[in-house]
Image 1 (cartoon, helix red, strand yellow):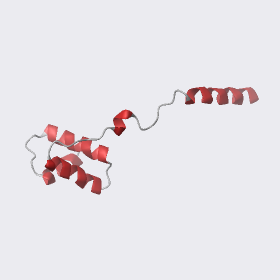
Image 2 (tube, one colour):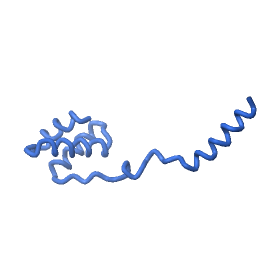
Image 3 (cartoon, helix red, strand yellow):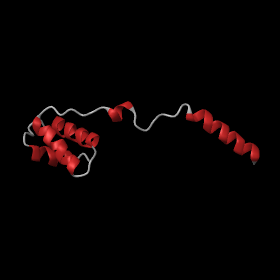
Image 4 (cartoon, helix red, strand yellow):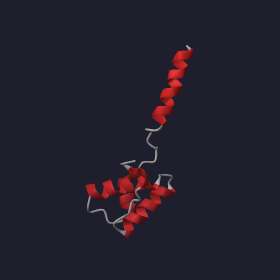
Length: 83
């Protein structure tokens, strides 16, 4: 039992050097909306409790799926389906 515990502790120390932080580069990239309507939509979703990253991704997907969305309210409604 002691040998197994020692091996586990040694491996934990070695693996911690290779561990990747939970906030990877992709998580730290800021979403930049293309228009003021998209920016307003992101802010509205953030005010509903979603993270800025989640909101930005959802707005981007919603606008990409339907280029005719021009009103911030319509963008928010469409983006909610991606959250």
